[in-house]
Image 1 (tube, rainbow, N blue to C red):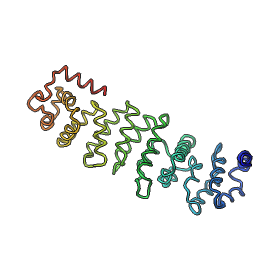
Image 2: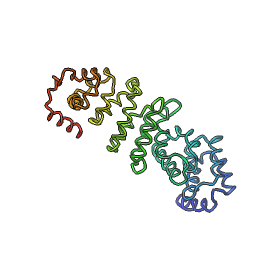
Image 3: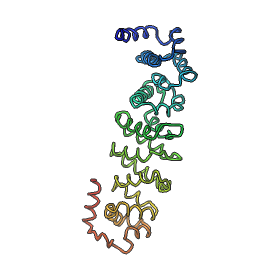
Image 4: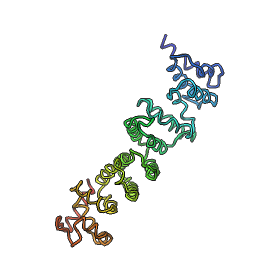
Length: 303
């Protein structure tokens, strides 16, 4: 009986279509306990064709007035506009992982097929804009959503990540998970390193060390991206540079070797040279021969 039901109902629903008035009437006021059936009907109606404007209006009205379950909107997401999706995005983010995967699929389908909903870069930004546990989902839900995006590398490409990060770095306040995503991005796409260096330099100008929830991520990022991050490190104020030297002692010899290059050294203030132990000539603590310095930088580049 159940198998026959599941076999014949999709055929019937497709024949009726999303503009059939009696079907729309039933959808507008579904019996209690029929939520799963309603979801199935909506999936069938939107599986192969875009939902009709009547169906969209009916389901939106149902959600706003009687059935406050955001999952009933999932089949319609590919046909909703950005302004319609963003207000409900925190609720969509709070759905179970398997349902959020459907959310992503429908939103991205809408972006690719109709130009509606959100682009991949806008999806990533929207995830970061959600404030955890302030009338929103817990932080783990947000981190899991970010990870779900990174799993789809054919959609969330290097270009998409560069665009999203480039927009987020100018946000005030910076998103809580911003540095985590920067690190994930450069891990996933090492060729993003130049873009990431531009972002780190911007963060220095924004005094990232004054943001205790983001500063540890910045430190981790500059450590993982050395020697590319050496110019950024030398942009830091001396107290912060000195603090990093103490926190990452293994970084010191390579950074000194980089800074001791004549063209670099000539551009550094005396305070930076002092922190690096270069104010009186060759660093007495490292005592590096030039060939050793070059080897050190090369080794750092391979780490």
